Structures are given as C-alpha cells and as structure tokens.
Image 1: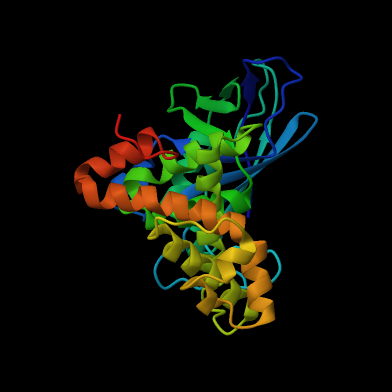
Image 2: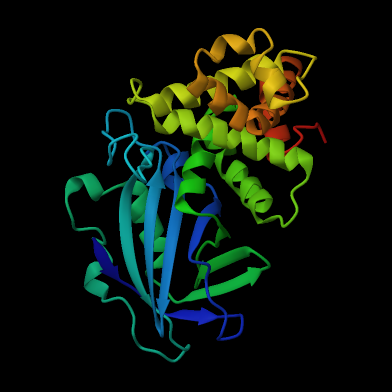
Length: 312
C-alpha cells in the first residue's frame, strides 16, 4: 500500500541523505506497551529522488498463526519479516504547503484488514502527519514531527534486522525489554571498521542462530542439516575448556567428529570452524549470564553491553 505524506525540514546540510536501510531502535512502541501488538522491530528502506523520499517500512516477527510471506529456504526469504507499509514523503523547505490531506488523517490505513495493524497506525502518526525535523549524530538518525515524539534509527539491512530479531528471542529476557537495544548494539558492531575479537564472536553467534531459524520448516533440506550441525557444534564446543587448534583437528576430535559423518559434512564443518569457535565463545558468556545473574538484572546487562555481557 502507498500513502502520500508530509514535509520534512533538514537540520543537516541539504546534501545529507538518509541511509538506504535503517532499523528503529527507540522509543518503545506505544501499541506494544498497551498490549495491542506483540513486540516487533520496525525496519525502514529509504529511497530519495530529488525532493521525494519513499519509505518502505517492514515489521519483523510474525504474529502467532500468521504464515510466512515467503517459502523458508527459498532465495532471499526472510520468514520473520511480515507486513509492509509504504510512505511517500516530500522533502520541502519550511514554507512548503504540501501537507497530507486532512481527510486521510482519521483513517490512514485503508487497505485490507490484515494491514490495519496498531503499529502501522502509530508509525503513520509519527512519520506522516506533520513536518519532520531530521538530524543525525554520526550513524544515529533522529526523526521528529512538530510537537511529536522522536524516533531514533540506525543503519542496518533488512536481513541484518531479521537476524537481530531472531537473536533477541534466544537471549532469555522478554523480547519487548531488549529487542531494540539488541538491534542498536548490533548496528554499532556492524558499523565497526575493525571489529574486536569479542565483537566478532557476537556476530558469529548471531549468524549461526539466524541460519537455523530461517530454515525452520525446511528441515529435510541439506542446508538445514548443515546449519543445525554448525549450531550444535558451537554449543558442544562452548561446554569444553579445550578448543581444537585447527579445523582438521576439530573434525577429528570427539564429540565433534560424530557430526562429520561424511566428506561433505566434514568439509562444511571445517569451512565454518572459525564461526563455530566464535559462536561457542559467545554462548559461554551467555551461559554465565543466565546461570549467575538474576532474571530481572539480565535485561539491564544485555542492554548495557551485548558484546561482553559484563555487569556494569
């Protein structure tokens, strides 16, 4: 669906352009806090052409009972990405009179009932009613309507946001408490030119988890078995104090050699040894957090430092 929208004023120079893809990292959604919707990440793809910007918003995480919008395992399929909303917004100066027609404001979403989500209604009110003030501090973008609430965005591809959502689900605390801060910290790590070892371990864990989650429902495929083997190997390795010093040693050492049942699986595990080792190191940190920290404090630690999971 496509909705025309309102004026934007740029606090940054006129040549400044929005990143092509961003995830909304704050504030928490009112519709989630009121119990109208489950927690879902909001991702935006922004295309600018002269004075016009088209924003395609996606919600990540399907409500219970909703079928995937694509076939798990098919090329480019992100099964946890569901509803989409397109906003057409014009970049004009503060004197522009191109505002949203008033007769659309009370009923902004007029497509099928499956599209009439509380989150989309909320986003429409925040992004498409009044003139927007857009500012950035480095890679963090703040979009504020006149007299409204600022939404904060950071660069992240749709696939990366999909992975972030899957990852937030396995960390332990309620997803609504941590998902946005998980996405924000992952955006920071992904933007790092020279990631630290600890940051690489985090990214390995995120990718190992996402590979399995995306193929859920495609269990008979070779890709699913390969992804599951990598995840299981990383979990096994996280419980061991001894880390094999090479890919060849890894697939020859018990219990990991049981996963290398044939030449294909052996080669796959060797090719992914670095990711397996990195994810194992992160699972070790996560295991310490879940066993040594009270549930109520885990959210605070995750949102303070997702990379090391150290208590502040």
